[in-house]
Length: 396
Ligand SMILES: Cc1cc2nc3c(=O)[nH]c(=O)nc-3n(C[C@H](O)[C@H](O)[C@H](O)COP(=O)(O)OP(=O)(O)OC[C@H]3O[C@@H](n4cnc5c(N)ncnc54)[C@H](O)[C@@H]3O)c2cc1C
Image (cartoon, rainbow, N blue to C red; front, side, top):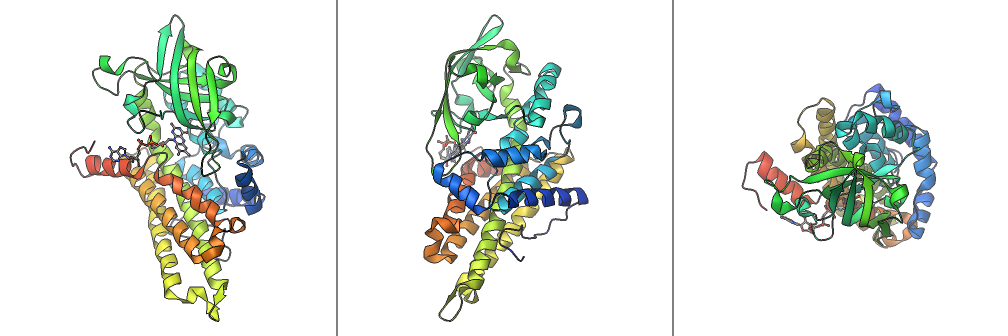
């Protein structure tokens, strides 16, 4: 633990392969120091050079099977990559979805769809990193979404609106969840939803409009409007009406990977707080000598340690093909709370300087707060644990 931006050790033993992946990511991230992220944040700009470097290093095809040109590794490897990006002080939100959004195509797409898209996603010539689920009125109640895809001959005509569709301006393809049968005509409200793989390059200006949303963090997120957008019927993934299940299938992976980013953030924030506490002298002694400063940092480390174990336990279960809903949800809960607690302590430890942009603490503070809301809010995780793990009544 000599620098603030090396991942702090906490209980996870890596295989040689994972350790070498971590080394390469750390090396790559050294080329994208705090000044890089700070400047992007000020301009609300997309980290194109970083995304390109990660693509060229072959890191974004980590989950794609070798037969389609990826590295065919598991979620543990993907989690290590994303954790290291965040532990370096960077942010993987601009590219993390390129790693896992293709899972819907891989698991449920036709042979033709996989052959067409996966090799190009693996080599980065195609960006598949937009995921259109959330809508302004439905919110967390996904089955109430109203974007509708109406079948017409060998096409579908799409109308509706999505919100918070991140990276849409930096993606060629979008995985879209839309209704194909109205909610009042299905037996179960989760029936009648379908997934489409939309080629946004041809759709933009022909029924698809993307509008950026100004947010408190640099996240390239947007609203997407569908106005009689005509898409070929063969963009449907899997069977019509079964899309909700397909989307749920990808959620454990997403939660584990976002949790890995949170432990990366926690590691960076704890290291930064520790270094400042050791060097800032007030009343003729380092502030870290005061228990009121030291103990919150020590507590954050304990929280980070527990969360990190939970993340890699969930990833190992996922890689072994075991059920991991409980573990994935709990990992996301613990990790997002650990990173937020660490952010709060780090800011407090820095006193007034925590608010100065050049220290990067306020940027991370804003960035890591997101993860208690997206991709799933803490309440929904607690509802999952209450209902599915503890067998209590459904709360909503
Ligand atoms: C920066 C950013 C990027 C995002 N990227 C994407 C993306 O790429 N694709 C995408 O589809 N979505 C994306 N999202 C959307 C994100 O997944 C949602 O914001 C999140 O799931 C919460 O939904 P909501 O905002 O509609 O909140 P709401 O559903 O309106 O909920 C508001 C609050 O009420 C709570 N709440 C609601 N119902 C209940 C209940 N029954 N019990 C207890 N608490 C409840 C929620 O937990 C939340 O705290 C993004 C969001 C943000 C902010």
